[in-house]
Length: 398
Image (tube, rainbow, N blue to C red; front, side, top):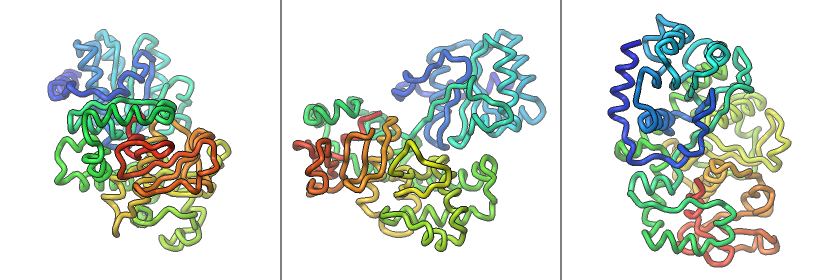
């Protein structure tokens, strides 16, 4: 165990705490078993190490380990936890728990056998706490971790602190929010860069190879996580990559499943299954007309890549600006835990109340003119005018 303590110590020395994401304060760290789920690269490991560094200093009682460490080739997780606990362990952070064979059964045993031990695990967004060898759903509280919002990107990369606002406040008093932001900066000077390469925290490592790293994230999910966690055949990975490339450059009109399935040479049912897997992996956002009654393998009304950076990294053609705008807005709303559905009256129906039409600076509101809660989200404007709000404004929601 000494080697794991030393590795944790070195990682903590390199962990910076000058910027901490606001989600740090939304996680119930005091719970006995917490799972942080998210796509590779969104910052789960950093969040765990920052919390440990900020709140716990004794590595004998509070420890971070990655379970894909070579140590666990010869030692079981249960035996390691027993040793850690006997030395006074109180808090254990297990990174990449989904890479450990039999993770759910051993986590259940740990939870049941050590009632005064707190465990935090990080895992792929594909981790299904309901489908492991043991039912952890009643024991574990999970939190979904997303990439950077526009607000977080501005603070992390450009050191400009913008306010976080609720959707209700944003829609009711958008001009005041706009003025508070423009008093500090011109958001449009940064927004396009964020849409191209600002969603993943590794933007801090430089922009030269940023899109290559995004592509590597996608390849890892397709080649490793989907086969391991969803049983997708490795031979089908190229077809999934082709599907993502097609979706990254196409305008998300009404989904033609027959056409898409023929394009990547799989059956309709197989394609619908793949779409669900890619959505769970946080590579796609599937839009339905009724989120509450969506059935498994139901055809989505529209399909978007999960964030605009994925479009930038995967497209084989020129990115459609309209699609990029819609992908941004949908991603930010869902990350902020809003229900977003397809509507024929505009682009999105939010929380069953607000109808949002997305467009450029000259976008009018004819399509939503007769709706009581119609909003136009316009790219290329700095201030709001009536029900016409700047698109970047929705990047302040989390």
